[in-house]
Length: 220
Image 1 (tube, rainbow, N blue to C red):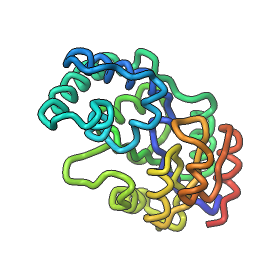
Image 2: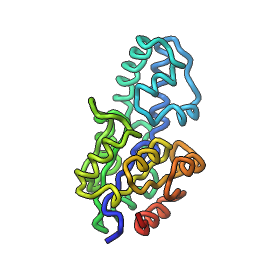
Image 3: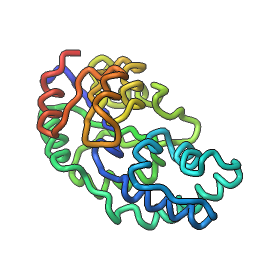
């Protein structure tokens, strides 16, 4: 049995490549409300802290009422186009399947809206035995606050120091450190290896095969 008895994964930029659909939906909403759209790459820095922060950044800090209108339009469009371009990253299903076969318990924790997280995981990661899949929920602080990560570790039945936390941004690495978990950064997502290292990643990996090896060999 690996030293890590459970692993929590971020979703966007870690398990699924969703940037294109997020950018298209938000640009649609911006144009509908008379605001300029952004290049897709700009969204690499807009995402990660929940949909309200996404709207704030995309609108350039517009009036809160306008942000709310943009957000409502975004949500409706994204809901209808959730799977247009979004796909699981190559190799991640194999990693998840192998970890489960090793006896490792699996969870997902995202700052994305809970309904979207559950739908994406169900369709794009079929057959993966997650114990729990959570997105942003009312009354529960978003990452990097460790509250949700610690609660998920308890649900997984492991202490934080026997739990890995895998993500692609500083938010994920900050969450791992705050929760006392083994943080692993992946570079195929939305941010750089330098950012992941700077925020305390215990390891940074470049391939799905490398991720599996690190998680199996981790010494918390």
